Image (cartoon, rainbow, N blue to C red):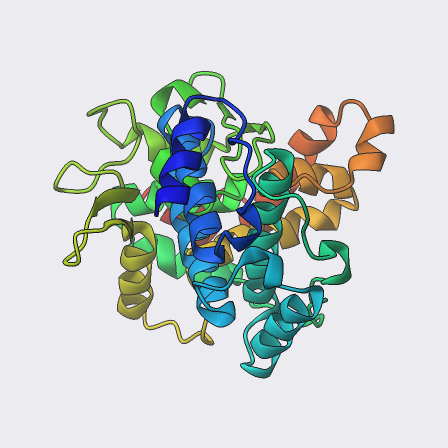
Length: 340
């Protein structure tokens, strides 16, 4: 504890850790706390989102539990990290879950090395991420979209159109602000929070119409009946007196209720995020991977985007082509559903 307090004081002051002769006995739990304390300070000044800190806490807890909280950092070998990876695979965790947990402890180690909290680390490059098996993931059909829209409330209807039009997920809708939306010119300028990649996208007339139905009651576009953001991470204190993050995703909850009301039977895992996958699938039919990348706000295709400087026109064309696949003509049932 004394060791932790000494290091924390220096890190908070923006100074390098104090010279130490016994740093090799620093436990993995203390290292984890130092790292998370640093991440929380970044969240306080807006460098990262609070939900990212919450996710990192959850991911690192499992790793610390596996190696043992009091084990000295210097005693954790590359083989130990490989064993953790094997344990996750044997537990049949999804590739996404495994890769997120690997990324979390790698980020912690790299931060500790960069800030001279530790002198050495296991060979992190040797711990490879898991390659997910390619499998078809469900998307919504036009008839299912029509039925969902017909039964949706005004706010949920606008979110659904944003999911189809712009590939927005739950958090995107929950954090969208009116200043990001230009209804007069039919545009939305909203960087993806997870990657920081800019997204300046065209809005369909149906999306604009749905957003115009939402009364302005604050800087956010969407608020719950109680006046809270639809998606939020709240920092509080648990029964044990320790600080904890609580995540609330009302977009996902309300969409699940909507699916039950419509009677649409879908396989497990289908939810609001499926709208984003549907948008990506339809937009990909344009044959332009850069447009899909811009739509989803991904940081992939880095080398390719070095040569392709501006794909704004392709992005707009691809997104509007997606609308044509859904809104087949002015007399289609789906077009009527947008104004229900």
